[in-house]
Length: 414
Image (cartoon, rainbow, N blue to C red; front, side, top):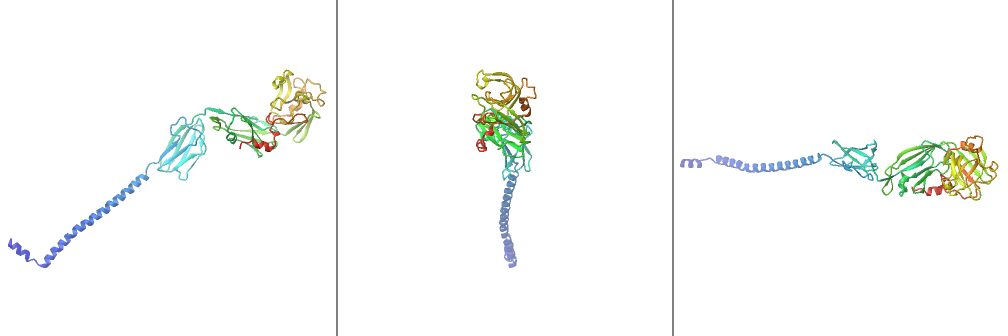
């Protein structure tokens, strides 16, 4: 024991300093450990930071979620609002909406390319398939079917498709249901001409819309009527169903002028006099309408009965030859075989029609009635003057030419 104690006391200072150095070194160890702990804390923060980055990376790598409106599987979707397709956690590459009729519904993206909206509403009674692809993701598919409208309307048009008419023929459309929203319906109908000319619509009633240029069509004009009435709401809950294009043609120009003071009709073809016929117009009690009239119907033979025009039983002729209608109210230019030939060119004896000498049976090509009928077509213009009667109403037949251009345009809803 003592030896050991003496031994310790005999240690050299350098040895003692060495031990202190060791202690000092050993004293550094906790500091190093602290430093190490500090380093571990830094590593922990780095790990935490790395974890946040990983979470952010996970978040940015989420699968894009596509939502379609109307929703996938809808059976009676509304057709009065646009289709929309949106994406969350991504942006769109493409969106395509196709109907079962083969049509494609066009649309546009917002600036961020996270929403697509159809340019027009979907059609009624149609099944649509949506194929939407977000960038870096698979195509998302959805289907929906729009409901059918409750009540519908169509427009019956004159002249007939692919027909050829005279220069006075307007495009006249009669609707099967009264139209309340005239502007919406008129905007869905366009009439264009080749060669081009301004064509304007005029509403005569809630069920009739006519189109015409300022002056008669040019001979040889091609007219195209475009109906885009499908799903246009004419009035509350009543929708159009037509979407079609039809064409008509204008033939040569023929304008016939009936002067009932001279009892004569002059027929001009393309500005040149084709023929002059003696006629007989309405008598003093049944004057003939004056003004511009357009041939709207043609019959080689037809029955004319006074009771149908409010004249009781004054006449009933079963085989009136070469009758061509000028007004809805019953004015015709027609052949007459029952009056004396001396009447024509000398007396106005009819109940309001314009008569030309003709033969019973409508087969004698030498008489005026036959010749005029043979030279005419639907849409030809017949002008009556000096009849002693006021100008025919513009809606009494296809006679809108009796309105000035300003008055005609005033009847447009757009």
